[in-house]
Length: 152
Length: 152
DNA sequence: ATGGACCCTGTACCAACTACAGGCTCAAGG
DNA sequence: CCTTGAGCCTGTAGTTGGTACAGGGTCCAT
Image 1 (cartoon, rainbow over the protein chains, first blue to last red):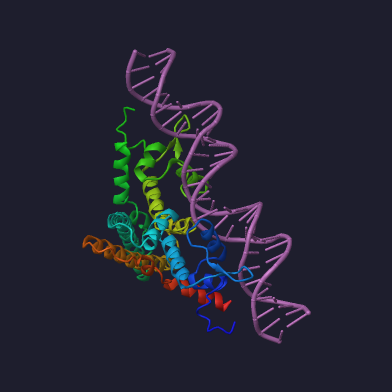
Image 2: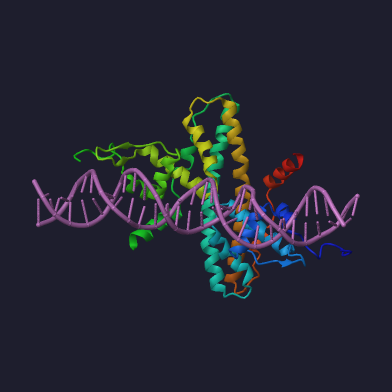
């Protein structure tokens, strides 16, 4: 291994550290086809390049934000299929854009309530917790789903 | 049912519709103690009041935003325990505030990338997908966790 | 050449649901 | 009143998305 490193890539342990994804979870994602099989050393160790780092970090972020695996597969498909028809890209991206906007809105409401509680606290008032009220309303997408459900 | 309704409450089916939570999931939440046991009719049907609606909707929103059950239990504790010491409230709320802010930041980046793709699409350009790059960076909390891990 | 850190496959387990099976309740129509 | 069908009950089994070993091989610094 007199190589200048960089080119050879990481084994699974360092990849886990870099991306914040558990080693067992990386192998699990490989099994379900969410990340491509990496190359291997003569002894059978997995060897990952920079592309894997980005992909895994993306998956990790998306999972933490509450997107299910199949949505992530869908979005990764946009990245993989370079010359996919524009209509597809538009449809997939638009669908998920609405989802993302809904999540941002709910998180913002949530954030304001946490801030209110903290600031009242700092003023010595043991304030009533309105955290439930802050997120007690259903989001727009839910109501749309209901409309669909009624139509069936 | 000559009653003016309202006072009697909902059975589990309507509650599910109202909150967007699956019936089986509601019963599951009751089993694990995330929602209190409701009152029952003579025949054993569960009867829910308005408080349950808010609580369940909150849980649903929080779950969709990627918060684990135990975090939700923690936050609901803030709402239940009215005269909890201010320090506790502050600590719990502050911890989760950082989490919420991180999520908002990542979602905003994500949103911008989706918008870019859609707009390029509308101009007829089949643009390269940079969706992975949009979420390819680790968030601040992750790096903090690493620092902790190294300290051990 | 060897010991300890790291990796391999395989399988079992866990959390958080989700989906029946088999049986009871309730209210509206006949 | 009594039936009938939608809705609810408990209990248990299955699914998704991981996590945690066990038992064994690889790598490389000493």
